[in-house]
Length: 397
Image (cartoon, rainbow, N blue to C red):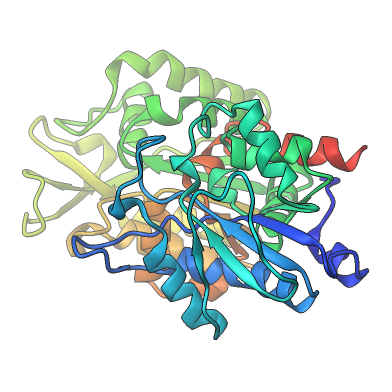
């Protein structure tokens, strides 16, 4: 994707002394006392901020946090805890500035955190007056929040329209590069793993991928629906019987291209959905009426693992079984390890996927781990994200 990269502006000295406005994603979880419980997004934002500071820019950073009501600030909405953690990571104090839309004072070489941008009236609807005011604060706008790249809001899209220069920060640029490598110019075979509880939530993703991938592995409740479509019984397993025609259409679309949607040959079942429920491995054709399918069987998992090891590119979204329960995690663990062992370029995204990656300690063996949940899914759907569209347009002049 042809966008202006902030790293290039810094390397060329174009950020020195300039007012730089960074839209980061600092939307981190907090406990009831307001303490940050997981700071991955804050740590991920640090390289862009440091890049700007080292370039001698006057740095403004903002983000949303939680779901505040526009125009009605409450202490719970404040980025103050984020500023404290950011200050620890940067080794300097990071002041929080409230009511910043009409003007911000920040010196070159300094950084301030602009209070929760979703409090500003007109933010979510991308109000033009608000966007123009934000753009007037800076010489360079840097979008570095992939998690918001699928939203056209004032601080993510409008400001990029009106700022003198609009560019991609290192985090957003890395996402763009990984997505391009995985989907736009993939090394073949391209294998996608799409798992989750419902076909309906990922139907457009399945249809989009069916036109492009060499193999489409479905897991979880989605696999149960595809098993039904293939004429197999699934007992009382989670599935969407009203979407069988859609599942069959995906299978046929793949078949027409000489590609495949592998249907499980064996499964792990239980009579109840519980961590201590006795697990039974059985052939896919032998599922009883009172069975719940909670994982791929070992034969299926090994067969898919063997195919993954031959892939050129792997896109992974979703664990294939109830990996939180020890008796039903083998499928997800086997596939995770196969991706880790493969020489393929791999890109993974989605909250449950990241949880599985962390559980099996394979973070360093995944080619790229996407930081955006909804944005990652929309890319898989074949959509052009608003952030990519506006930054590409601004780069073209």
